[in-house]
Image (tube, rainbow, N blue to C red; front, side, top):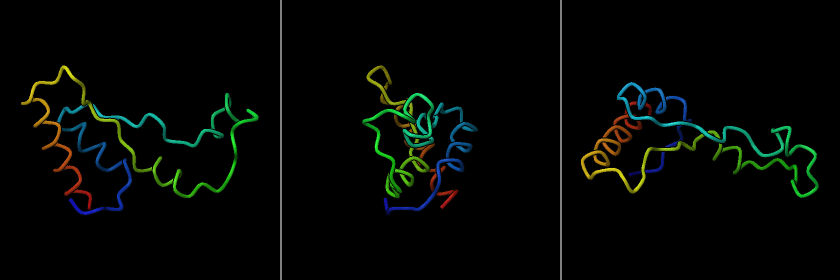
Length: 86
């Protein structure tokens, strides 16, 4: 599939409407969270690539207990969501 420049919000809404539980677990960079903000090993920088990844990254329900049919349902829903928002 060609690379697309979409945020996670559009596909996430569409996935949820198909009853595929997806989520965004890390929407911000490490130093935006209070627990890491002043940690000496956390480097604050512009981090364009990290910001881009955080805005586009989705967590999908893919795990060893999925049946092949359930995995096909997740894939079909994801492809449909990406096509609808591209």
